[in-house]
Image (cartoon, rainbow, N blue to C red; front, side, top):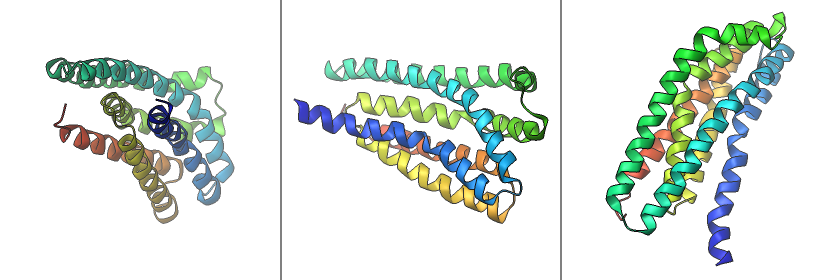
Length: 211
């Protein structure tokens, strides 16, 4: 069965690499086109460890959801699949709201504890704040793509991620070059791109009738 395993796993590996492109693209765009490129690069780089910590949380939930859905899918237990998907969507919503309520008020204190330099403090703060407020896009993409993979389709999740990556590049350039929003612009572009990918995953999931 190695061919089937390879066909299923390869899109997942490419997707994991592609998901890291968000921050890489943000760094490249602000470095080339922001008014103060050096500070902008430093601000984005300082924000990444915090965002990656949140990303790992939702990837973990996604892995668990994928296993549960795959088991029920193999058993042809449609009722349990629906129950699991509903629970995942609900838990993700609760987690997003809880993180915003807890993290947003203490974000400035976290940056102080991390010894964030004053010259990049504001940019780093707004990059994180915008990403935090829009984290539902990142969360739901990872959860829903995990569910779709659990149903045996890893290619669609990769396709939607690649679409979102293109959207992110385009919006990065528009927001930074045309509007001059710099770090806040690339953060907003990433949030919008992640929302696009999560909406596409929801659309795909709603059309999967042969469960």
